[in-house]
Amino acid sequence: MVVYIFKRIKGLMVVIFLVLTIAFMIMRLDPGNSAALMLGLEANAEDSAALRAQLGLDRPTLVQYRTFVFNSVKSDLGTSIFFNQPVIDVLWRRAEPIRSLSLFSLLIALVIATPIGIYAACRCGSWLDQSAISTAMLAAAIPSFWTGLMFQRYLATELGWFPASGYGGPDAGFWTRMGHLALPSIVLGIVNSAFIIRFTPASMLDILGEDYIRTARSKGMGESRVILRHALKKAVIPISTVAGLTFALLVSATVVTGRVFNIPGMGNLIVSAVLHRDYPIIQGTLIVVATLCVLINFATDLLYLLVDKRVKY
Amino acid sequence: MIADSTADTACFWELLFARRNVLVALILFLVIAVLCLLAPLIAPADPFKMAERARLAEPGALYWLGADAFSRDVASRLLYAGQASLTIGLGVATISSVIGIAIGLVAGFFRRLDAPMSRLIDAMMAFPDILLAIAPVSILSGSMVNVMIALSIVYAPRIARIVRASTLVIRKLPYVEAARALGSSTWAIMTTHVLRNIMSPIIVQATFIFAYAMLAEAGLSFLSVGVNPATPTWGDHDQRRPSIH
Image (cartoon, rainbow over all chains, first blue to last red; front, side):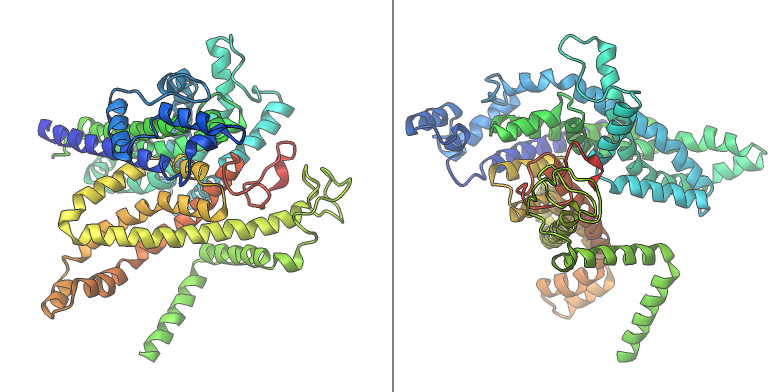
C-alpha cells in the first residue's frame, strides 16, 4: 500500500508540473506585445519596455519558463499588476468565501442527492425514479447563473428571506458573511446535486444486487434497515468519488454564480483580472485551482483505501 | 447488403419510436434548431436595431418578449442567439472530437506514448472548464472562433480519455490481430478496425460536449469574457430583466 501511495505521489508531481507548463503556455499564446496591451493606448514605448522588463518578458522564453517553474514551486506566483501585491496574497484574501462556498454547496448537494439517488435506485423504473432523473437532467441543463438570478429575484428581493448579494461589508461578522453565502450555496448545491444524482442510482443498484444484501433481507431485516445500515455504508465510496470529481465543475459554477451574487471570490477576481489584463492573476488562479483539483482527486482515491479494505494495489 | 441496411434503418426508427423520451427530445431539439435557422425569416425585428423609446418595453404585439436595456427586440435576439449558441455547440463537439480521437488513438496504440499523453490528459482535465476557457479568450480577443477553439481545447481531453480506454480494449481483440497478420498497416487498423468500433462512446460523449459547450459559452458571455457583446448568444443577460430567457 505504501508503494502504491508513493507511486501515486510521483504521478501527482508529474501532473502538477504539466499543469504549470500548460498554464505557462496558455499565457504566452499572445501573438503581440502583452505589456503594451496591459498598459493601453496611452502608454509610450519606454513604459511598455519597462513593464516587459519587470515581468521578465524581455528574456528568452525558456529562461522565463525555468524561472516560472522554480518560483511556482516556491509558491511565488508573481505580482498582480492591478493590485500591486503578490498573486498568492490576493488569492489567500479570497480563500474564505471560496472555501466556505464550495464546502456548503457540496454539503447541500449531498443532502439533496443522496436520498433522491437511493430512492430512485430502490424504486427503479417507477415514475418517481423517472421524474427524479428528469429533474436532475433539467437542473444540469439550466445555466447556474439563470437559477441564481431567479432565486435572487424571488427569494431574496421579493420575499427577503436571504441577503441578495455581497459579502456583508468589510467589518461584517462571521455569521453575517456566512448568511450571504446561503443563497449561492443553495444554487450551487442544486446544480451539483444533479451530477451526483445521475451516478448514485447505478452504483446503489450494484450494491443492492450483492449477496450480503440478500442475506440481510432473508434474515427478515426491514427494507429501510437493509438500505440504511448495509447498502448506504457501501455507497459512500462511489458517492464520494463522484463528489470529488464534481469539484472542477463546482469551481466553474462558483466562478459564474459568485459573479451573480457579487461575492468577493474567484468570479469577481477573474473577471476584473480579464478586464485589467492582469495576466499574473489569471495564471495564478489557473495554477492554484488546477492543483487543488488534482489534490482533491488524489484524496478521494486515498479514501478508497481507507473505506474499502478489499481494494488492493 | 441493401436489404441489410434497410432492415437497419427500419430497426433504427422502431427503436426511436419505442423510446418516447428520445423521440420527444429529438422533436423539441429539431423545432428549436429549425426556428433558430429560420431566424432571418421569422424574427419580428432586426436583433441589432435599437428602436427609439422601446427601452425595457413590456412584452406585447410589437415586441413579443419585450425589449432589452438597449431597446433591442428580445424575441429576435433569442432566435439569432440560438444560431450562435448551436454553432458553437456543434463546432466545439466536432473539433474536440477530432482532436480527442487523434490523441486517444495514438495514446492507446503506441504504448511508449501512452504514459506521457495520459498524464497530459490528466493535467488538462484538472482545469475547470470555464477557467481554462477564460485564459485564452482573455488574451486572444473574444470572437466566436476563439471561443470555439478555447472550448475545444477544454473538452478534447475528455474525448481523448475515452478513446484511449476503448482503444486499449479493442486492440487486443482477435480480429485486430487477424488484420495485423493479414498485413494491414497500423494506420489502416487504427482507422478502419478500431475507430469504427469505438464510435458509440465517442458519439455519446460528443453529445454531452455539445450541451456543456453551450452552457460554458453562456457562462463566458455572462461573465462578459465570451463572444463580442453585440452578437446575440444565449448567455446574454440583463440584470434588470432576468426572465428574458
